[in-house]
Length: 67
Image 1 (cartoon, rainbow, N blue to C red):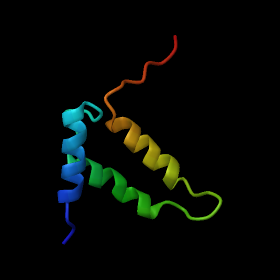
Image 2 (cartoon, rainbow, N blue to C red):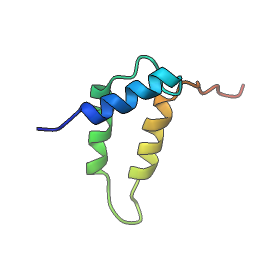
Image 3 (spheres, rainbow, N blue to C red):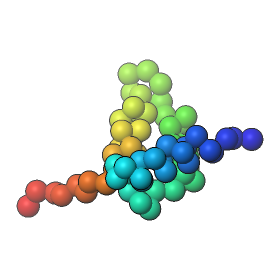
């Protein structure tokens, strides 16, 4: 069975120091990153970019589109 505890500890630490959103849930993180194993390998590998998007979404800053 998958051990979720390391993710919980990492998310909890980030929530405490203010770098991770307060509503971040380890179950959401695991579900989102689960798709990475299906990403294509080789030149069309998008997994690193997809992971960066997921991690960016956990941070407390908000993206403000330019108008």
